[in-house]
Length: 195
Image (tube, rainbow, N blue to C red):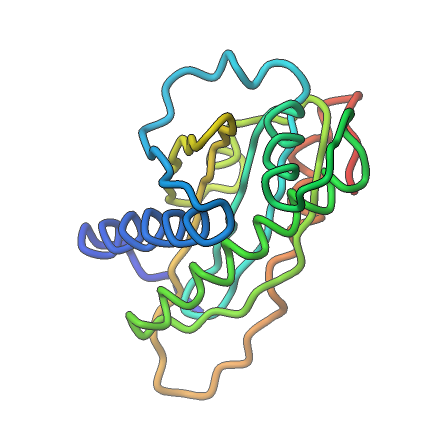
């Protein structure tokens, strides 16, 4: 199936959907209003990176990627689940994956309002030295936002390729495999762990 070129209107729609979804989730889960801005400084990510990724497919093939450092991931999960977490552990891994899953569900709902139907894959998590130039590796359009609330910060990126509308029966393949994509992203890095 040929790909459709993203229009300026669609790119603006993606930005609105991503911003609205982030605001809705952060306000609902954490009772906080997030500060959303363009990604500029990545120095804060250098100490132990964590990436959670989930695939979406349907009217577009897309990936929603959350990247943060381990300290911020711990604070995020403490805010989400309530337990005191002293070190990066299974709760943090699961909580980070759950947050990207919740965000993807809200993104799916917001796109459905614009008549773009999507199916969700399963989230995958990588910790270690994560390559941040995902867009260059998967060759798609996308946007990234720096998200800050309370003492938590992370980057949320949405990478997509539109699929062309069709009037004939189309058998779509499976939801993009986020685990496989993350494996490819960290192949060059010897000190990453995929969960």
